[in-house]
Image (cartoon, rainbow, N blue to C red):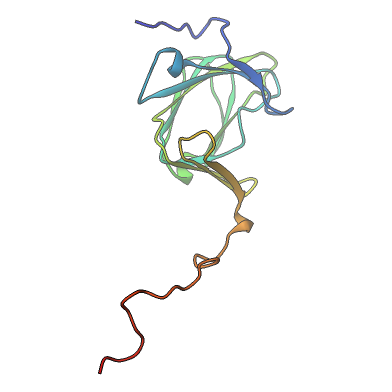
Length: 167
């Protein structure tokens, strides 16, 4: 049996540009989980977890482990405290972002169903992310790069099919 303590100081990495800087630990991997993912995030004062987004293909839950982070959702902003749990459904109604506006560190655990493929929508920047599950087969694009469904397709003759009427 694997055990991970949410109050410990074991981190996989520290990353993110200014404004989105955080430490993370993939708790699900450490517990050898297969169907449920969980990542522990520690946000310094003034930082955000990730861009405001919602997903298709995954449901996520947030558990506040420590601090008083602000949760931005489609309904507005809400200050949370240790022990609060929130569920983010698929689609626009589940849009969310965690912001640490306090003067102390905030720690949150995000759990996810880990479904692939999945699509993430970023309304603020009008981007879409497509996650296949394969490390080298994912894509983040702006909506403005959209092309017509048939663009790049070349009509090919169908063997055995003729536009000429039969005799």
